[in-house]
Length: 510
Image 1 (cartoon, rainbow, N blue to C red):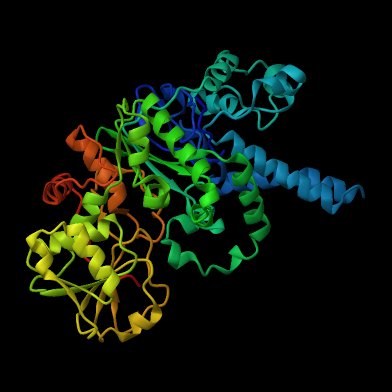
Image 2 (cartoon, one colour):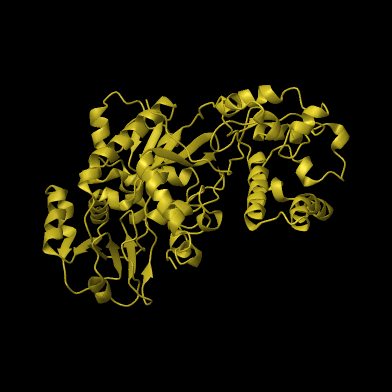
């Protein structure tokens, strides 16, 4: 079994398991009790924090900032006064200082052991994150900033430094309950994840898309694209926790454009299958397929993997049932007709059927879509509520990929467009109409570690396909929800509400 890779980052989760804090991407440093001798009010935030973290690396009292400035500026000023300075030297020195400072506070051991094996004296010239973490837990040890040599000279090295370093390198696999498997969308989407830029990840994708400085990052963007093409594996995007349920989001290093190429189908399905099997090996009970990972042409809405692996213990969920429930409950009371337009999907067929069951007439604008819906109903009586119309007078439109600007322009003023697709289908929006979010719900307050947005959704709003997997695990349902099957829509909706997920109160997307 191939191990799923992870991108190195200084971000970390703050979940407390047992006797240690675990980072987002692996090992953690044990936290011991703070000595009473240093608990006075004069202790700075830098030294009073037991957990080494990136904020602590640059957070000091004002006087301490001045002292650090003097210390770090002395070598630069000396080279200038002696005529030995240069721009390259200055930038190299500052870069090294910042790199080492942040590395020492990243709360993740990333210095490989073979580096010290090849060059043993490096142990005295460069500290490691685990070495510096002991300064934050023991306080009266490991004083050296970047270079442990002086701690060794003055016998202030903590005796557990080497043991902690060895222990930290032995990464324990995280236990988990639910995995949400998504993928990259555009080349810039890497910046909108937690491991990218926090300022962008904290805002919905469409709000942050106009940031001018992203154009300056194109060399980095191009490099990240090359890495993902070569890397070709899944990686961890974030970790969350809902009460006792441990959640992880994994992403496949493929872009939208690759999902639309049939030549990529085999490699994408291989990555999805490997992720499913690995999630099962790690103890996950449910894996939900997000975005294009559940395409009909790609893998029959995920049913391909259940067919190939009939002994799967992990439950594969596409979340379609909850998506249908969200859509049907988004229709205002008193509605008698809705238009459905776009490429018909599993969710679209099921939503049309559910609305017809409620007595709401479903109107199509094209004959071929009307015929497809009738066939999908299998001759049931609900098909009498399927109509064809060209009047465009309906005020509620269920739309998906394939909606044209011309069709959108013919809708009456005040029309509400409700997407049934994974992606927002309307790129240009009319100012006199309202546009609902893609099927989604607000998350419970108990959901922890939510510090980024899911694509174009607001903070603490989660797509129905993702929530579907969480609800599946919370309820302990013992069947797959993928392929061409749909669970009971009302049962799934009631379960989601019972576990604290809420319908969105603001239906429009600015």
